Structure formats: structure tokens, C-alpha cells
Length: 253
Image (cartoon, rainbow, N blue to C red; front, side, top):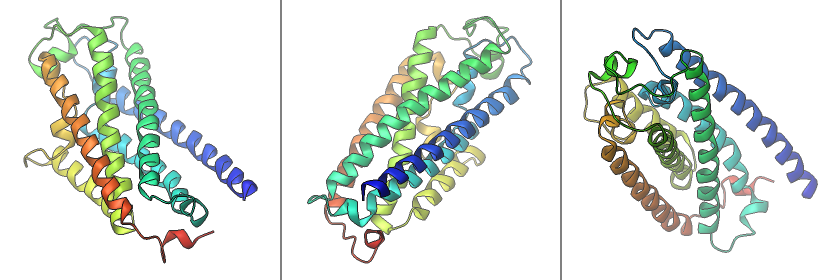
């Protein structure tokens, strides 16, 4: 059994490195695509701001969702499930892994944003200037500090990503498949990004460029995401305690 799980671990490590490489390449290309089209003076932190564009966030979240789906499938193997008397322990373990990995992914994406921004500017932050890329996009200026942008962006993306992934993984506990969770992610992302319908999730809780003109909005969105994450964990604990694996993936060796 140890050899079996050692081989699984090595395989998962390889998959992780592949996902990291793809994620970094996609994030960098998306950032450069927008920065190269800037018609005003950009700054380094514009790369971080562009990371949070709706279309960019959706693409990155979907990539990370597939990674978590791959890793989580081992949690439902029979040799793992029988070790737990309380199924909620499996769910809580998954939530901890999701939160920890999403924190690392968020930091990684932010680093890519900074690296992208360095390609086009030596100025860390210029959002208080009327000729800045930020001002042209928002028609406003902002007195926000660079440390507020770095910390706020990291925490907001981390929490939003964590909530999205928990919903996707939680869909397996409900329906024995990830399809419905992914369909929900894609459908709500589409309505948030490319329709005039009221915002559902990502558009409502991911920090937009204009939100940096009022930093208190960033704080409110972060608090809302914390509350949502806690509610999802609690609901997941309730559902997982009643989960039966007989006839499902638990029978796989």
C-alpha cells in the first residue's frame, strides 16, 4: 500500500509542476496582452491589477480547479475512506489543502503580475496620476498605497479562489461528480463577464479596478468572502457526515 501511495504522490508532484508551469505561462501572457495595449503610462502594479480582470480570473480559476479535482480523487479511494470514522474529517482535510494551496497559487499569480509589470515600467505605483493607465481605464485616480494593493490583491484572490474550489470539490460530495460544480463555475463566470445580468459571484466579490479608489470596498469584499468560506465549510461538514461511498469511488483500489 505504501508503494502504491508513493507512486501516486510522485505522479501528483509531476502534475503539480505541469499545472504551475501552465498557470504561470497563461497568467504572464494574459498580463502582457493587456499591458502591451496600454495607451497611457503603466506601472508595475498594473500587472497585479490586470490579474484580477474577470476573464483572466476565470481562466486561472478553471486551471486550478482541474488540479484540485485531480488531487482530490485520491481522497475517495477505499483505502483512504476506511481510515475515517467521521466523513467530515475528509472534507475538512480537503478544505485545509484547498486554502493552503490557493494561498500559494495566489502568491504565485501575484508574483507573475509583478514580473509582467516590470517589463513595461520602473514605477511601482502611479494610480494617483491623471495620465496613468489606471486613470484612463477607470476615469478616476486613487491614493491607495502599494502595500495595500499587494496585500489586498493577494487576500482577495486567495479567498475567492478558495471559495470557488470548495464549491467545485463540494459538488462531488453532493452529486458524486465534479461536472455540476464546474458547470456552475463556467455558467456564473459567463454571466458575470459577458452579459448585462446582475453579478452573481466573481464580479460581485473580486476586486475591480474602480474598487481601489475606495479601499474600504476591498475590505468589505474580503470580509464577505471569509463569511462565505466559513458557511461552505459548515455546510460541507453537514453533507459529508451523511455521505455514503458504497458503490462509488470508494470501491476503487
